[in-house]
Length: 72
Image (tube, rainbow, N blue to C red; front, side, top):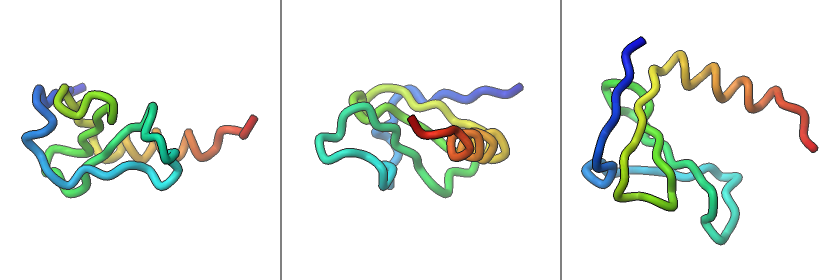
């Protein structure tokens, strides 16, 4: 499996947070659409830190799994 890390996520622009993120911006993931290598994901608490890039199929599988989880 190919894994890609972007060491300085601020080098990319266009990050977005989930519409489910709270107003205080704690514990959020941010994603970037349209990256040629896949879907970059970063921690909103560390926007200057690294981002992991997931393949599009892996990201879709993750989202499907999260949506299928029962709410507590």
